[in-house]
Image (cartoon, protein in one colour):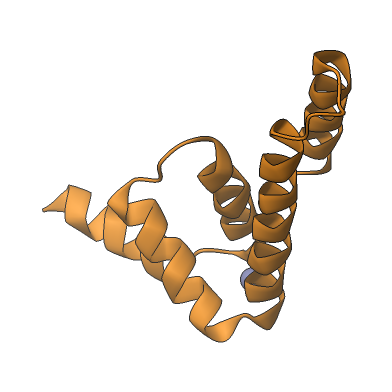
Length: 88
Ligand SMILES: [Zn+2]
């Protein structure tokens, strides 16, 4: 019971800082169901976090394209990946 109360509290009280971290983490690992709900519920009322998620998704899609770009050396791909991770 306490576990469900903690999960509900986390879902309803997520801050922009916590949710932006979840949005970044979403690129690297699958979120738990509590984390997904916390992110979704927060983004319903937060335009900045919705916009941040769109931007992160865009960067991820660009990185995905870069991974398969034939003109880039593996070192250049690693350098770009590290730079993008630092932005998160
Ligand atoms: Zn927010």
